[in-house]
Image (cartoon, rainbow, N blue to C red; front, side, top):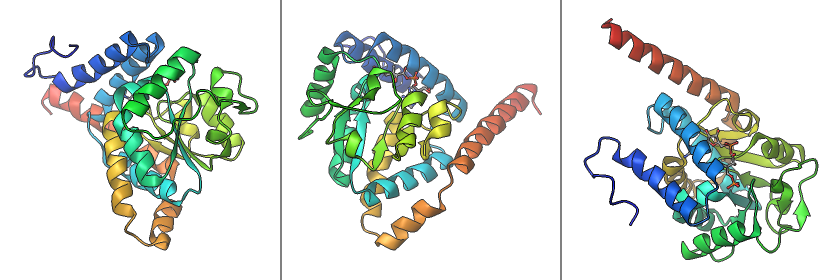
Length: 258
Ligand code: PTJ
């Protein structure tokens, strides 16, 4: 079993276990090698934000919950890394907001798309789009991510696209989709282009988003709408950057004892 090599009392146990999930996903043909590199980039930013869900991420999570609740046709887009790290949370979020789940891959092969679908069905999904039915295309997008399901992303008003590449976020915005992303890098093209950017690790953000939706579903529609209307993604990204700056200067000062 893949977790036996890491002692439970290792100070970085949790972080190492997340890596192991991705490595296992890679061995099973769910994650691409590039996904391991992408995770390393994410880990670096996670260190910078302090490996915790910060207030700016909570603000974005609340707004994302509101957008998903108000959506007429929400879709959660799943790639290899997301399937390896949070399959159950994807299914639970889809259930609580009534969203469709769609496999959408940058490095697409039909075999990997099918494997990811199996993972999601195994996690309790009733339906997974984007595998045998990716017959529509996102205009002006030339990567494999242009291929989408007519019942899913093509018809969606709100799309959750975690760990995304900038090109598709821009293309989705151009065709009028409301885009929510989860990205540890606050200055990635995706982060800067999305309507809502949750700067947090997907392993923390997804359970928090599920909880936020459950809580918000009890509120009246006007209140939910006003949470979304008050949200400003530029402010949230600036807060993420200011948090990193303050954290780094605090750490630098503590090393100098001042
Ligand atoms: O499965 P595929 O073929 O669709 O490919 C998936 C990857 C992730 C390889 C592909 O989408 C890709 O290359 O993505 P990028 O352009 O490297 O962007 C991934 C972004 O996600 C980067 O900005 C990372 O910082 C961020 N990231 C990585 N791991 C996490 C993360 N954000 C949140 N939580 C993470 N665990």
